[in-house]
Image (cartoon, rainbow, N blue to C red):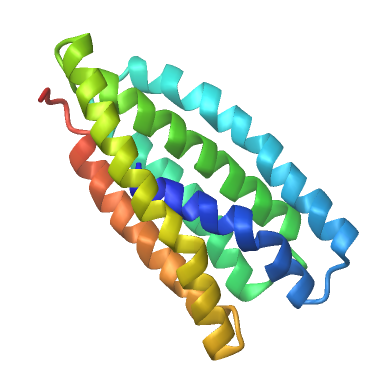
Amino acid sequence: MGAQSLVTYVLIAWLPTIFTDHGMSQAQAGLVFATNTLVQAVGTFVVPVLAGRMRSQRLLAVGVVALMASGISGLLVAPVAGAWLWATLCGLGQGGALGLALTLMVLRTHDAHTAARLSGMAQTWGYLLAAIGPFTLGAVRQTTGDWSLPIVLLLLVCAGLAALGLGAGRDRKI
């Protein structure tokens, strides 16, 4: 919950600014960001359905993180030229990661009581962790004067999220 929410919060806070800082108009950056937000719904609805049909969700977890990481990587190489593609890839991954995180809480427990306890713990600590993301990456951007390092740090979060997904996606109950 924490890592996927951190990526999402950072993109919500800074994606339009990344585009405008690279020369895109505010109006177009807003449209690209709106597309990112709209596309998240696709991942949010599709990924849990797929996850429920699988014994192990490891590949699915790595897949949604790969979508996010691909879009984030694009922000390093061609932020404006590929903006629509990057926003779409990130959005699919963001929605899929949220849907998968919530679904795994049900799939990894034996009963509703345990699922509720796991959900409460994961969401409380996860959202607290995620809340530092926009501030921290914004401070790094302000310190360096460039978006490269904050984007690389976001990719490192994606790498950690993929590792967490490999563990959480195993066919085991807690």
